[in-house]
Image 1 (cartoon, rainbow, N blue to C red):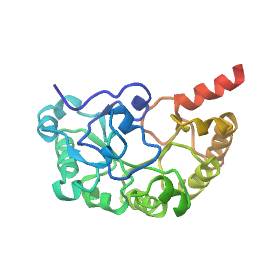
Image 2 (tube, rainbow, N blue to C red):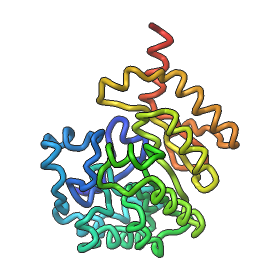
Image 3 (cartoon, rainbow, N blue to C red):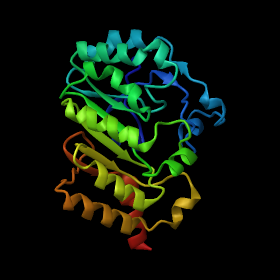
Image 4 (cartoon, helix red, strand yellow):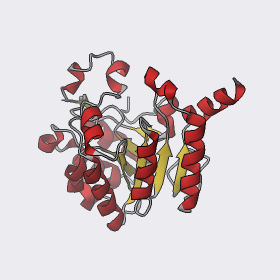
Length: 252
């Protein structure tokens, strides 16, 4: 059975295919859904473990996905602390590229991920989750992830090297900071995925209809077109959770 898989539900809006090289993550993000999805306590999820035989499976099966995008990774950061030693991510990127598959990276590790930029090009995508502008909020919610300025600097470097760049604007915890992130990054980010804040009652205090409208206005200001299908191309895509919430408010 291939370990390159089709993500379910909302995850499929990020990528048609994905692979998880590890389970567990070191960032300790308070909003992370992965511990619950894996039926683990949050503190236990801090231990990173390589997924068994994943590289072997990628090398065996990647040719079936020629021309497709494969995301690294949903359930961990591909550039976690263990990968500094094992470098499974670098080996996986090589195996995908050797078989004509386009790697799509999603990382909050910052400068560490530039290690593999030599393997990426205009057929690849490098992305980061951007949640906050200021360091204090980032350290509170994402205590062991790279700070926002470092993540943005890495995105800019990727863009300058001809690598496609993308940003996940989710979760949206403080909408004003999300808007500021668009202001700061629109010059070197090719694609945005705009979501909301899920799995937390505090999200109910946000006017999501207004957020949706304001986000679209800012994108339009910078000439960023809306992409209606969940695929990687220049522009911004609004996730279905946000659209459904806006429709729910309208129907109440």
